[in-house]
Image (cartoon, rainbow, N blue to C red; front, side, top):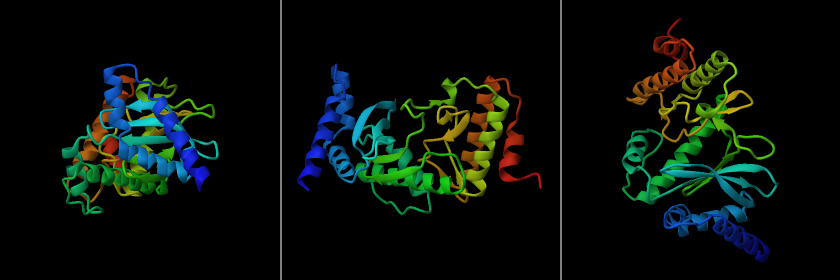
Length: 258
């Protein structure tokens, strides 16, 4: 037991030393990400073997930072840490309280963020089981989500579609529509915020990420969210000179042709 505690302490010290605190702004952001409760959560995840090392950030956002981690078996993992102080709580309340799978009636910010992480974990599970290409969810605890690392064997993270060199845009569009179709028909979910920002390209295959706001398709606003997703995809591929239409994609996803 003592060795486990020592190991976790070493990991946490390494985490703190790698925050690269260079300025007042860096210190503020570092304290927002690695607050006391988050560090305790990471400590428990380290003790359970889910994190052995935590390296630099893969991505940073207003609500969450994603770090590259290594588990006790030396596998790369993605560690997503939601920041309680800067999350959009009104959005979270809308998407959680309107989801029939959750019965959350709280205004406590930390509890809301924790429910949001659980929602993302369950959405990833549901999508993966339906055959959608998403990161495999490993564990969710409080405001921390650990999932499959999307990248190469050397630890270089896959780039989002907007930053990727797309060799065959038409084929990529076909693959994305197929994933949207599986998500809708088989998983019964709508992503709700799909765009070239949250589609990673790994070996020319699209991997859908950031599915925390995903809604079940029987929700009253699910079609509105689906429409928004389709509009984003049409716009993104128009920039790549691929001719497609909103009606064509929606018909394919919802099987309106039959």
